[in-house]
Amino acid sequence: QQQVKQSPQSLIVQKGGISIINCAYENTAFDYFPWYQQFPGKGPALLIAIRPDVSEKKEGRFTISFNKSAKQFSLHIMDSQPGDSATYFCAASIEGGSEKLVFGKGTKLTVNP
Amino acid sequence: NAGVTQTPKFQVLKTGQSMTLQCAQDMNHEYMSWYRQDPGMGLRLIHYSVGAGITDQGEVPNGYNVSRSTTEDFPLRLLSAAPSQTSVYFCASSPTGTREQYFGPGTRLTVT
Image (tube, rainbow over all chains, first blue to last red):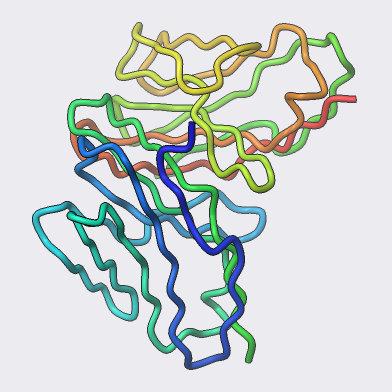
């Protein structure tokens, strides 16, 4: 059962544009929502994370927007660069759930120069 | 710190063979986990451990065994490899209470 649904599966953006990746969840017990970035041949790396007590978190060009009532969260990459080309995974976790993460299926982002 | 290390990087097995994927971390993290990554499927949790001597099953545990005798090491054993276990395997660790998982570089396993 897919607990975190991620879209789109792939995304092509021009350099300087905005990349937007969306995730939706059903389990209201989730209280931690990270995004991971994975380059080819490498392991995923934590990019940015949010908890549901805030609606937005920004780190540099990366922003998470969180909509608790809609049970959705999204990653926005401003001024996208070719070096941002990677696969992005959203995830969710329950406090007290033994640190376990449930991942979305991933979005392959390509930023054209 | 080396972080999370995995060996081997690549492995080819024949159906029915057994092997152990090694994972080690030098960050004194209590939580460790194994995932498999298949095209279009994301990362799926196989087994996890919240500390030495404690392990539990994740989403896709069948065909895999784990043990955790030390904080540093968390090996994953395939007792009788099957072609369906062809995948990229990632080990991760996390400091207790943070849920910030640090991933290793992965092991690409092919079962023929």
